[in-house]
Length: 123
Image (tube, rainbow, N blue to C red; front, side, top):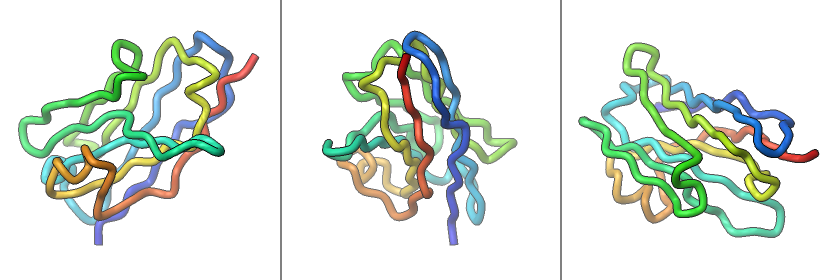
């Protein structure tokens, strides 16, 4: 059974940076596509980024392009989301998800989900 655990959330000010981690157990991280998603109160679930299986092609949502970077550390079986130039509208619970079919993640679906980590951007 694949399990995902997110960490690294917190309260930061606008313009700050934060790095989220998604630790994968029960499977090898590069055998799965890993997606980052977020959900803010009263808003729809939003895809943030996605890294594919194998060679790791990366896709970003339009609202985070140029500010967020996803990377994968196969040795640590972990995927990261580096967030820079954070804005109040980035406030949300951030989730990572895994699926052996990357295209499922790109439409917001995934076989395995973490519990989420809260990111709050406020002055």
